[in-house]
Length: 90
Image 1 (cartoon, one colour):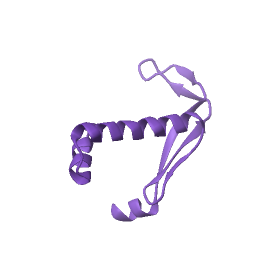
Image 2 (image 1 turned 90 degrees about the vertical axis):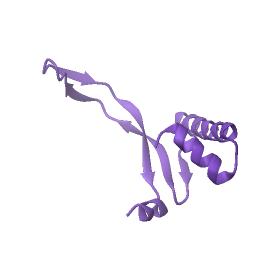
Image 3 (image 1 turned 30 degrees about the vertical axis):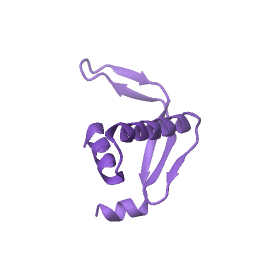
Image 4 (image 1 turned 120 degrees about the vertical axis):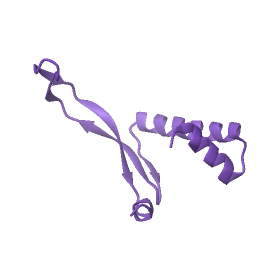
């Protein structure tokens, strides 16, 4: 399902216009992004939680040349599904 399809489903289920649904979805995405940028966690009970996890520096390989390269440490977003979501997709 892509973003347009999600917008259409939100509009249908919440009895909103597609324009309002798009605004709501974009606001949600923006809010989660801003929250994760500050290092905070987003928890939606039953659905899941998003947080930022540190990834250590490591060695990797250039797949074309086979040469060893250094990959810098970074922060990556992480999602952990909640109990209700896990049970729904069993």
